[in-house]
Image 1: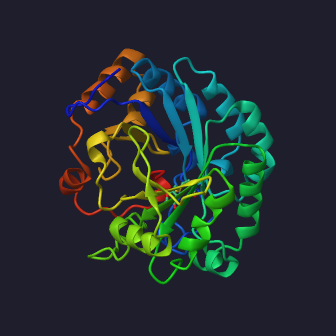
Image 2: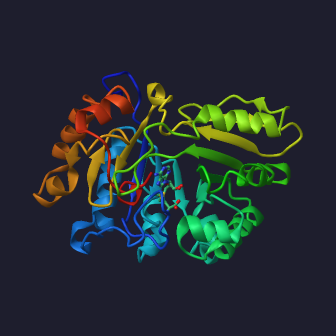
Length: 326
Ligand code: SAM
């Protein structure tokens, strides 16, 4: 296992397979979308497989596929099967908006997907349309039903936003009554592709917790899984759990075990850094596995201590989360 310069193990890769998305969530990108990269600038599946092999030899054992929307890239399922067979990869998970996912759920079961994170900020069709600028809630709910029916472990991601979905906090929390899901309420981050963000965030993790405690006075703290970014709670008697993720307040950097590869093959050792290694250039200049390994190790030895240090080193973030993968 490899440890970084702050003695944190690096065991978890989040791999963005595309920067394209079929939703236009206002907190992620402008209405007109972002300028997508030409296909030649995206990593090929073969390149991604090679990088996962190299990283698995360094101790990465868990991979989460993300994007953009992973299922808009052709050939994704075949890629997942190959990735699942990679020596050293013990857990393969995916994050999706669920628009195209429902018909693929049976194959995800056969593949042995570890868990699916489904992004669903609201259970109200009109609010969903306003937030995502697309009328796709029925498709997302179809995916949720299929995941639950097939007993795939599910985490539901909801960004908490003033004036947009506060009334959904109890509606989403109620999903944990009868289903063993984790509903995760996430602080809004500045990765909206426009460079604008509140000077002070309205819905911090503390305020989200206060709101939930008011709604559910019996809310009970649970132990968090190791390296988790979420603080976990349970409403007594309910099957599922509620997570609160301080994604903007950045309270969990001390145990961060994750690295990211963007769709264009840039390594990020912190969500808030500006990309620390152009892996695609290395690959395409003919680097050997040993050279790739050396470059990764060098990057791991220079990780910022936390997301604030990373942001200070680069200046304010402006890019869309769709280019990073979240
Ligand atoms: N398309 C997939 C999906 O929707 O889950 C995967 C990629 S998406 C960028 C991953 C996650 O990032 C989603 O849960 C989304 O809500 C979250 N996200 C995007 N922009 C964000 C922002 N500005 N603040 C907080 N979360 C954000």
